[in-house]
Image (tube, rainbow, N blue to C red; front, side):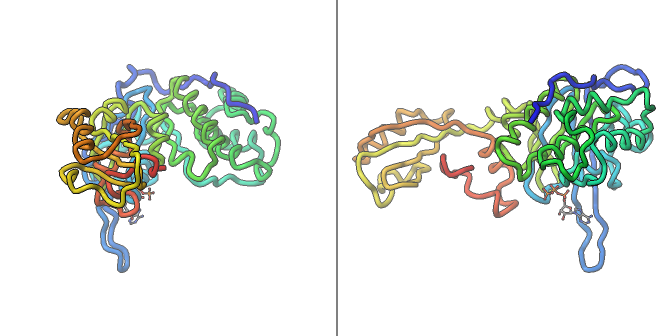
Length: 345
Ligand SMILES: Nc1ncnc2c1ncn2[C@@H]1O[C@H](COP(=O)(O)OP(=O)(O)OP(=O)(O)O)[C@@H](O)[C@H]1O
């Protein structure tokens, strides 16, 4: 497979020239209530979302199932009508300047709905036509190259592999050179190799100037790829910060202690600690570095008559923060925040 080229078509838009906005996307007090239908009651999917996505960022939108991510993206893409609030894409209001705001965004949906009887070149030209891009301004060949599909430019889409189809979808979303690209769960269900490749492609697009907004269920994906992250839960933003700051925010560490003998339960002398015994010879102690010194933890272990054979510390990761902020909202994802190292992914 060809690697996507890092040199992608310039992302700065051919929209009427006004000063570049500080924020590629700005959302204020956005609400959405789906009306009651049949027996289904009305559903307040977004309850006043405020979001500011810096121009040039690689922004991750995280949240458990049903948090409102798709609703938010679909409102930005002009596919769902909001109930209240405001949204601007590249400085263009989605109501008052609907055409301009839509021209500023490209959306890669989760489903790979590609017409199997078109070739990638035909498909991109067709899409460019839909966006009214004149033939002389089309960037079909650049896009095919950028996503590593120039060799497949004239092959029927049905003969493309899953990975190629995904890359074609990214190219399709870029035909009108939008400065903002939205990817809905870009690597859902893809294998590790393809995921790495798609990440590299997303990074390349971002380096070339495109602001990227992606939703993901994979916390590792957000942690590795995104410079800024918003976590939404029950239709509200519960955290928005740089990935680094978010990771610093949780004052928590885990000490993993290997013992010299098997235990059947945590010794009574350690009752006051947040402690678990995932294996007969392994204790995991969670503590707050701002309040507890690691020496105190070790002293307590020794005072309980245990001999430490080996130990290591585990830093907080995004999963801890996610679980802390969305705890109780979703059975499958909001489990015990003291999930043990090694049992997470
Ligand atoms: N067309 C609709 N009519 C009624 N309710 C809807 C509709 N679309 C979404 N909802 C509800 O709105 C809430 C938010 O859904 P949304 O799809 O935006 O969440 P999500 O975060 O994208 O979840 P997922 O990760 O599962 O796609 C959910 O409770 C969902 O059931």
